[in-house]
Length: 77
Image (cartoon, rainbow, N blue to C red; front, side):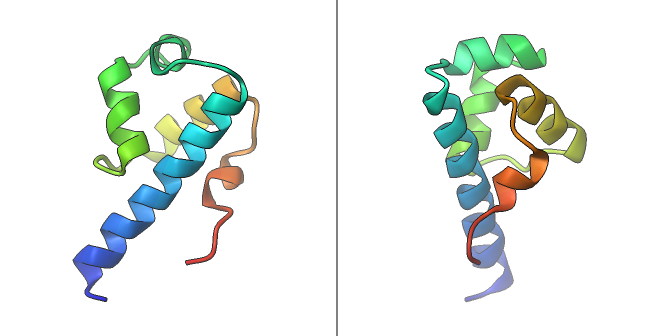
């Protein structure tokens, strides 16, 4: 795989993890966005792997979902 494809796949995997824990808590993208002071569209882009979150954004999301940041990276790559 080329670097660009690897980057895209990595972002998709992180996004899937965010969505998984959001749904596990029966939370909407709007509710998560409100807790993180973000637009729901931004949450949607992150979950789809179409946006690269900063470390501080991932920290906000992890606090809102009550999971360690490292949880978002717990996948084989």
